[in-house]
Length: 225
Ligand code: AMP
Image (cartoon, rainbow, N blue to C red):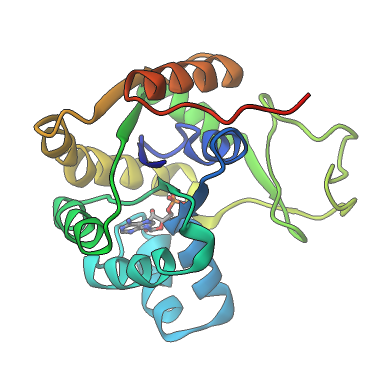
């Protein structure tokens, strides 16, 4: 299965991607995570991307397309991919189409998570992650089991993304509306778009995505009992 998850910042793309990885045996490719790793390592790409990301703008198409091309060639992508955060511009969508054609990969569906603006601000304001292992949490929707302690690694240190501040979130939303929503007609013309209500609770959204994928001819894995 190869799909794209589209939605504004805070829509829950990362959370849903993780659920889909389990259900469909495909690999999540999150370009935001890849860029944050580049920034953390101080690589040339990271140095170039850091200021752009902190300003809530989009990193150049050239860098993104090159990064994605390399990532998709790795063996762990052979069983399919869930693209989370890519493409974000029309040139990226066109480059992806060419890349899929070149490598014989078939795009099954483009899942669009729809939410209203106020909900996004609330969702983003509550996000935090473990400083040690990167596990993601939310103050209201996904708190740690024990207050102040990471469920996965036991660490007590947590961080907020620097680009989750209200000012930067507004600019990221503007980038989504101006640069990313124009990719929807591109995929609508190919009959690939499936819209899902992203305002519902996490499990309901996951079920709606599964139903949308079934309509696109993609079945979840059978889970052995
Ligand atoms: P995300 O984690 O998906 O919200 O991405 C965080 C930031 O990384 C974005 O606000 C952009 O600055 C950058 N970024 C991630 N994916 C892309 C992309 N496909 N094109 C351009 N910039 C991106």
